Image (cartoon, rainbow, N blue to C red; front, side, top):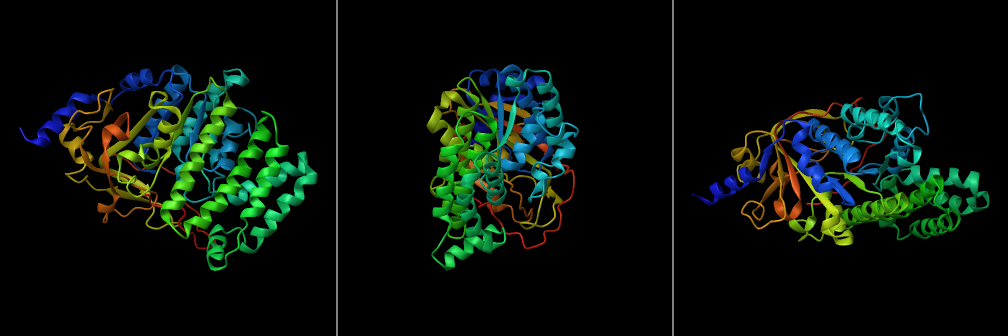
Length: 431
């Protein structure tokens, strides 16, 4: 037998067919009692990834005590979803109506049929529960600088109007850049002056005034934290991918910790994000580049026994993505995976969708084997795939993997609107 044969035998020994929801029983059992379950995806535009993530999350809510969901999305947009799924606002709409208002590119990440169906089901489930037991839906990301600043000013106007001058100073500092964070970022590179002091003062003031466990005060504090971290993120973005990546993932992890504290000691959360955020960075080439991520930080801060990291992968099919940042989405082909990649090994070993639960023993051949693992972003070129493979040791990166042979492009609820101004890339590659 060759070394490849050993790897293939190992994969076959770990795999169970993924055809019906019952195939998820083992993962649901492993999640019981854990504080955090992070579910990754190999692209932001694949229907199977979204569908099975939703099925697994629904079961974790019903059977494993999950009480909140945090996603790789903007806080203000997801706050509206949270209000809706818990029956607190916009109760005359369905999920498609709420998601139709998403307008920051790429809208298809959340305004799509799979998310809409999941949210309709979550709202129905919540309606059957007491208000205190309803599952929340929150955004973890850092991009919403202006939206968050506007929400802070609105909260202060109602609750602490004498603090509005502090918010107004921050607003005036950003005003010359016409709500364009990229213009602000490049401006700080050309002229060594920034709005950092103004936003830090604003955060301090909001934290001093927005006290207590109330939902609106929590929202105000979170938006103030976003303004501070977004200002840092955009300044760093024009200097280095590494620094901005780490600012972003540290912010998402800090938001997870704030949510866990807000929801209470008995709460349990599910995190939805790309594999590059969910899979432990220390098991990939990201670590050598000085990059960290949510999966690594979850394990470091809370212990591996409190965390379940689940990745996804596929061999070929179609995907929704864009050729460039800010342009319209397309339905693109996903070429068959490289033979020397983890996807190539999984294809040769299985040929069918599968669940691979890694268990406690991670020294077995395939789990410790280093190979490329495909990552497709919102910007994608099928003809230039070599750079999409992240060197990975699967057994150290995840606790389990969902594998799909053939996948299909996610169906957006609406096409991307043509931007009024040039849209610049904000998400660094990370690898």
